Image (cartoon, rainbow, N blue to C red):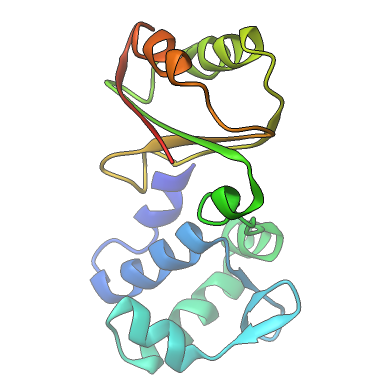
Length: 167
């Protein structure tokens, strides 16, 4: 689906940058053509600066989104999420970051969560990067308690796991 969305902007590299930024951040485009996160409006100048384009490119991109039924439905319903990754250690929570050989392989999340469950840790949050947007996607698991060192060894033994980092 993501490639279909980006394909609508082929031949328009500046607008493609904007569309990728909106998708990566989970930003919406409301019915007035404003970029928002929930009800908070994000100025087009800020989006343009982050995407490395002119503000008018953002305007043109949001206009195109509103004119296309599929794009409008996607961008009026996408949502961003709050990641606990950077604050988890401050809250006494555990953080595991897992990188795999191939993010398209089936069963990776299941295998990882089974190991976490064997250590009787609750999972507070699990977030995976979409391989479409990331060259090196990671799975981040936030646990209710710090991660025991021996669990890292067990995770590294799983098929397809390239690296395991704890914070």
